[in-house]
Image (cartoon, rainbow, N blue to C red; front, side):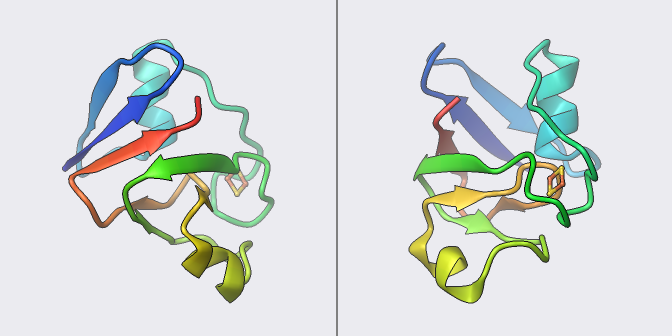
Length: 87
Ligand code: FES
């Protein structure tokens, strides 16, 4: 598990192993716009301000992945204990 912090509210949410970030946030009333929920379409792309995403999509290019500033929360996770998102 890891935590996700949203800059707009300053709130931090724990993401359990069996839920995606999108699912865990939705359960807390935070909606992220999604379409495929499989890392294909790029609809959910979210800016990452701190932390290192564990990219699990097949949408971003390799260059975009290493830039470390955006990810797909419908399927990707975190390599660091905390991800700070521009949400
Ligand atoms: Fe399609 Fe996330 S909803 S990549």
